[in-house]
Picture (cartoon, rainbow, N blue to C red):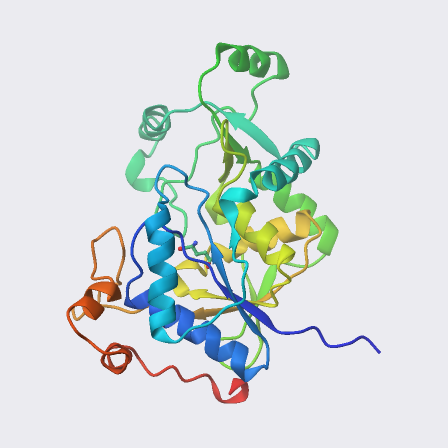
Length: 303
Ligand code: GLU
């Protein structure tokens, strides 16, 4: 009989700001799931955006989690030390001819969309609200690509979504789906990555994006449950697609509700929402901070 795999989940912040209450909630839910399963809770630092990630935010994340009473094993995986691994995965996708270089600037993309018969207003948007990439450079010939490479301009590696989807469909002979655990019962949900169009998977100088790094590292760390906010639920379609194409194991997913402010807006670093470090510095205790969060209760069958 196959031994049951150990439950492993993770909290994977990007160190480009202080943690806010939403992060605190996410880490506490992850830790509670790990405890309920007698499993492990990992911290992973997602610092592939070297332009924005800062070491003092990494320290701040660790101090804040520690203050909250969250614990994790060391050493902590830092994605910035794994670019060579991501480059190999990108090379694999290149060899499968599932990605293509795209030199389109934002301006060029917007102009192509504006010039479409029904204009920008009718143009499809992806689940995150961004205009879907119109496919410029998808069918560029090899000769033209060589010439553009020689010019030295910046480019992005985009996934040929239709081709990737067809290959995945052939490999699984089933619709792409994932298992959602947030209700306490495993729920199989079909999810279509095509709504995202040809997403960017890497750039000329950075051999990864969030999408490649997250699936590669969840597999490398043998994560059995990805715990994260509901804002990332739609992107799970891209992650499942990549897992199928790259023959990576499929974890379960627990997408927890987002913490919102009194007006119902979800908290974000970009909007400058209070880090709970500020709350701490204002003299709040751990209990005061916990009282600002919904109860960290797990669905019945998990607890
Ligand atoms: N690094 C991502 C963030 O901070 C989270 C990634 C994930 O949990 O999959 O938003």
